[in-house]
Image (cartoon, rainbow, N blue to C red; front, top):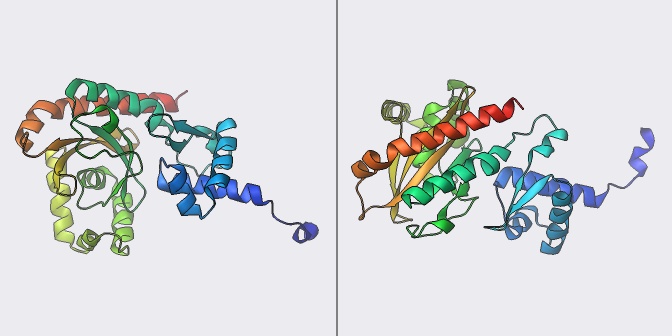
Length: 261
């Protein structure tokens, strides 16, 4: 082992690991996004992605040309959180729901300090005013998905998330994390109603989100975006709340079954 210092690191291996770390952090990512994050040339990123794809460590979604990690990554480390369920389980179910109700549907998960949209049906919805693809990020405390996740996660993880965002200056709304009364009110309202709905002026739409609760806790959220001047929040609740919950429960059940295989 003492002679290892005489060997040069294998640069291609280092680059491959950098790309895996990038996708794990960014979520579903394009070549440009991975290149920007890793500071590697696009050509290098492309070759690395092709290699990782051939070895079944990642997959490319042909609909949005974004790359995501597959469960084979677990063979490299026990510390990896498997998000393969999003593509194999959740995506077909939200696409089915979108075909029935037309409004765009999305799946989001938490990375510890913000919510990341992992999959959306925007490409299949004529009602998506602004097309959003996987990788879009929103703050915890002022997004419907974030409020739902924070409200349904366990206390230890909730405290960790609040601690993380209190130190993070990415979003101005993160300062709310220090207002304990405001946070308790948010959690109480979401837990009582079972959902969160928040207007997004930047999207000219509102978002209605529900939790994906499993026996091991919340793993993500399902959300519907709608045009404010086309339908009211109360109408959305009456018409689609039940459908969102049914889809959420189907995802949770299939996810739990996948863990037993």
